[in-house]
View 1 (tube, rainbow, N blue to C red):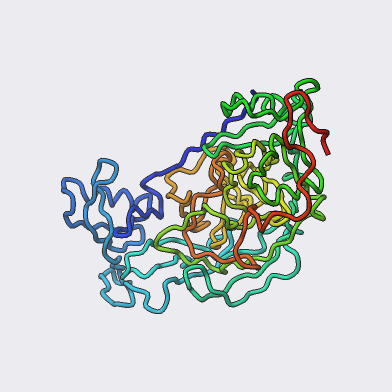
View 2 (cartoon, one colour):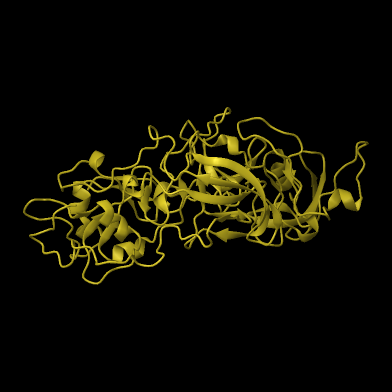
Length: 453
């Protein structure tokens, strides 16, 4: 079997710029400040008081805690900033933000740094302190957004009333040369990897869906019921065209209808389904991250493609079928249109001047998403549980998960906006399409597969 393995290594580094181990403690910034946090607990025992100076000359106070078999000074009290004359300031306004949970400044994500772009959560509540930049809609590719971008009042998932960008994505790659749709299903067990798409296991492995992959499905899944091709001709059972899109609209098993490779092409959807989304103009951090698992879409790519939730792999496989992804990690259905389930190197439009990995899109909470690796194929280290980190140029941002992990990124660190039309189905069903069941597929016999559409 021809496979390509992409190890889904979850970076759980303890020294990320924004790391929340529990709701009780906030970790200091990385670099020299983090070193100072370690040094502050030299020769001290757990829970002893500690303090150290941060990179901005503020005085950080906390207690020593055991982190990765060493002691680190963990802040559980507000930062005490210094005044211009170098003395500690004990002003309430200097240590807390009473009027709002966030203070922000807009900046570009192309390497241009703005001053005072620090978002400060209410320190009285011991929330995480993160850097964040405002959403920059100019980063989207030409043709990715349909119509004008509006700024509107909105209420986020956590109840925060703020402003959002209301924009409509085209629902198809605006960069088709670098992010092409397809291919999906191979036509026979002799087909090469170039003639088929990809499949994932949710654990970090990406499979090339070539003819050998189809031929060996029963071995891969240790189940002899897998028989997706005619053993006499080697022809693969493929449901495509309008019928393929109908079946793709609901991945739930249909009794007696199994053993087919499914594809729904953009041309069957009039070139794409437009989606209108509300994304906060500036992210609003949350104390506890929100899981991406479920039915909701997770964001938008810079090339105008929807970022979907994790695909329902178990449900799809239970009907002995494959909703094959293309080489970009996407497929389509008549409800959500063409959407990504993995970041396979497409929509990497936001090139960074400093060599950082390129930006691929925005999450629904307004935080930017960057590729897993930079131009030297190096992965970011010390990421938090959502796959995020902070730097002075980009602020807080996510890095994409490994393609085979069945997620674009790990979780949401901010309150989410929404897609117009209510709950986002993300590729699951809005009800099974009407009309008769597809003619091909039920009761396939080992020696006879139905003709491809």
